[in-house]
Length: 311
Image (tube, rainbow, N blue to C red):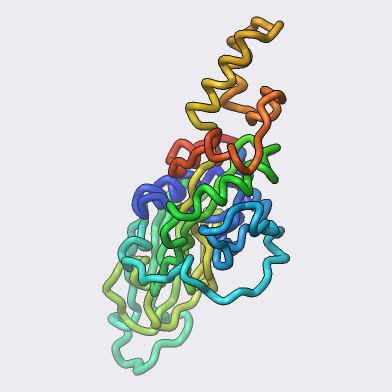
């Protein structure tokens, strides 16, 4: 699946939903508590912290928490740490460069009480340029970590002491649950989707695919991706990024003053790309000080651009 044609969809969705990103490959499930690494053309979920059983009041030593690979997460009932809420329906409807026409042969042959192929009603959607798209989902809901500010230090301790070999870790705090969704993306200009409907439908492609009316796919031209009423689930997320704090960078610079290697420009660049442990092994990260060296910031559009930059 070529990511290049998905660029406009990913940017539009991130902006319209105020920070949600589709998982990759599209349709693959994620959950709150998953943490992942983001690289060009690659999104890798590498573990899961079961936030539903996380006790913010206990110290790391009192309650060491096992971190699971996603496939091995134990089945736990929801607790006070997470909640699920309805989402704004219009947030999960978007399109760019799409226009639809309706062609009805019934008007030409009114004597027919029921249309039969090839005298079907056609709903034709045109995609003007490459990477034009539509996306629609209904009955969406949002599952989120409640009171993250009470848990964030505990999560930093776990990630920093067990997974600090990763340069940057993203932690999923919210997932969008889309029971079913539809999408189409063009891989060239003048792409086309032709569907058959039993009756006239006055609405755009997002309305048609979100409705309950029967439809059939007759023909596609120039599409790189097409999913109509696909079974979904928790397929999009909002995340926070665990990054080096200002104090950590200050500590690194102090250490660099006394290093034998005076090529500071090289090290300054590595501060952004590498993790604290690899840069300065003499700075020991442990559960008691991890919160001083790492901090959270919202995942931004610049992070999405990193993901898209491999094209």
